[in-house]
Length: 92
Image (cartoon, rainbow, N blue to C red; front, side, top):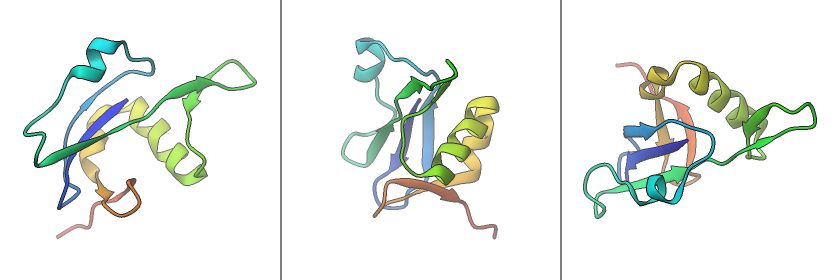
């Protein structure tokens, strides 16, 4: 999973779905590289043989698994610029 976001606001602007990415995917970009950044989330097989996000934070892992099940939900989140982690977007 590759998540693209605005460097200053944390607003998510796009995503490339998937658990394993080829080099071509890693070359892709959404928007302006000067204004946007990305998070590349690696997925690995766990002890039971199922893929899961390779992150230490259990809450982040849970969020990423939910997003993997329903990718459109990615837009319900923003990226915290300081921690580079997902957080729920505040409702206006």
